[in-house]
Image (cartoon, rainbow, N blue to C red):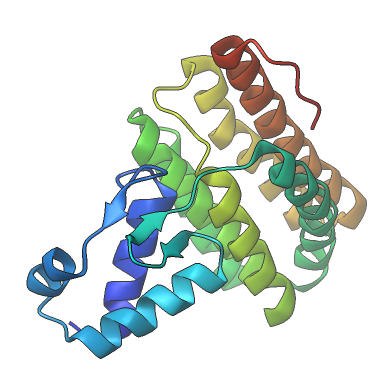
Length: 213
């Protein structure tokens, strides 16, 4: 397994909470699991730290970064703007092959009930839309922002909210087919706002602390 594959596996474990915030990542255990050397593993750690996913504490170890809800407020503001732009550009630039792939993916999403699997498929659907913008800078930044925000997701979620994923993407597909840039942007922005509202409700109910996103 090469370095990039190991990087993606560790990142996915962090993003989807297999490695929870605060967990120590032990080099020896990871090197044995992935049969990887000390130098490439440390290069992976440097990459993950640059993305805000882990923190190295001198003379202590490497830990999965804790989630700052105040920092996430800024993240959500930026992502809400960029995701709307992605919807507009996708409506303008998506091709038939990409649209067909997205339709098949969303159809599969509608039959999935496992919360973590559905969340991963939601991320994949966003990636398809982002790639269809033909703007690599936008796609890369949206992926990074999504990886940071999804980490505060706590399973299980309400079934009603989870079912809305497929419904909203089906609506988006209709707007993309019509090449309606304004509607596509609004649908994705609304999808993001629903996600924020769900997180706020969860956070407030669990911490009993007022927080504005």
